[in-house]
Length: 228
Image (cartoon, rainbow, N blue to C red; front, top):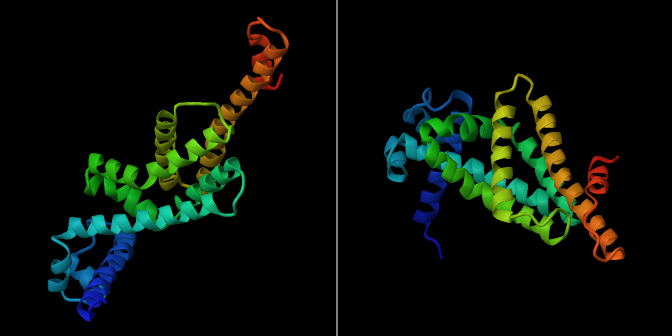
């Protein structure tokens, strides 16, 4: 059984992280002091240093908390309601652009983290939390035959880069809601392009099966892809 001391220690740490998330979101990293965070959490500064070596360590804990919250929301969107992988992928994409409107995610994960943590450390952390989910979605689309048999790792990394750029666009836009709609529709078009190419290739293979020895009719294939 857990001791009362362990429970108190965990609750103290959680209070500090919650306080840091709130204050970093409202004021930013540079304008937030450790004294203010400790006061907001109703703990002593000594208790703060018991859990964190300094301000950057506390910021990284706040960053992790925000990322975990976001990934939990995305995983829930992808998993429920159960359905075709294509619909699950679109649900996840919609949830992601909605998440990009969250003030804590914008301020801490997008604006502040690359500066406070350094670009390389920030990128590694982003991949740690987000890339695995994106890769799983791409893999499920390929396995279900929803998109072409593309290299999963490469495709997931390209989509990860696109979504990271989309998050920056949304967070920096004068009209974030409009930007989120544009990011969503653009990424959907990219995915639909992969889907159309896959459907066209399957149809072309079926045509070739009816004509043994015939090559692929590129004109017909292009017309199918473009809807002509």
